[in-house]
Amino acid sequence: MTGVTVRSGGDEGQLAARLEHNIHTLFGRSLYVRTIDTGSCAACESEIRLLLAPHYDLQRLGIFFTPAPRHADVLMVTGPVIRAMEVALRKTYDAMPDPKLVVAVGACPLGGVYDDDEFAWGRLDRVLPVDVYIPGCPPSPLALLQGLLLATGRLAVKIDHVSFEVHLEATK
Amino acid sequence: MALWFIRGLARRRVTTRFPAVIDPWVRTLPSPPTFNSSLLTLTVADKLVECCPSRALSHDERWLVFDVGACTSCGTCQRVVPEATGVSGVFELAARTSAQLLRRFPLQVGDR
Image 1: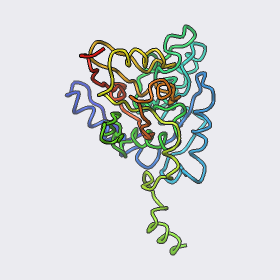
Image 2 (image 1 turned 30 degrees about the horizontal axis):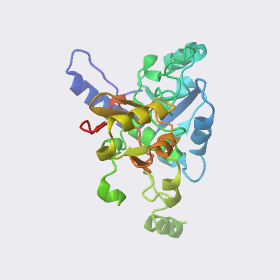
Image 3 (image 1 turned 90 degrees about the vertical axis):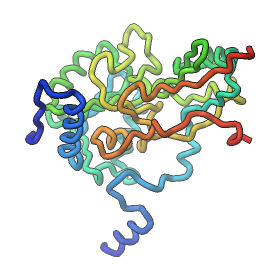
């Protein structure tokens, strides 16, 4: 990993912009993804698997899946982060080389279904720093694709431009 | 091969970016709800908060807060209060912060 220089003591916003630029140049056309299932129902996994199908063709974008966390740039976490998987999750995160990104996939790690469950953390950001949140139960492959491109800085955030409000004129 | 590639580019089927043309049937799949804030009263908001199985909705005196990240697109709120809710048809909702996933809708506090 060359080209990544993060100096301490600088302005935080500047540092963040620099890091974002570095992530874009490093991961723009070559991104390795490791997925980890922390107790999900496997619906998210089946959608993630569909990313490799010819319909979505993930590899044309320079994004690949790897089974080894030491080769991975992105950790895609599905499931509500059950406490039994916490050690495995942290070990996977620690094994990944810097700089690394964490993507929370689906409603479970976003606090949807098991927010108050005593056997799970309920939210991924209670355990790991999350870079991109992908909502959906399960998120469609296009939503996952958008999340991965958002993580690498190749796509802008779309949700800020989405209105969830129905106006009366539109419904009539 | 080259002809196939040029034809594909013209029809926007070959791309190294996010696909510009999305299949039209995608919009018919379950997606997060939309809310008609002119019909949102405190009683309607109570009903919505009570019916949501994934606790994506909460409200205080003035605002209905919708956590898009927690929503499982189950459609329960659309069955319980069909007049004040609708289907958004939007899926590409990934965000960088969890605050971007929280949506606020003003409640009509005058009439109960």
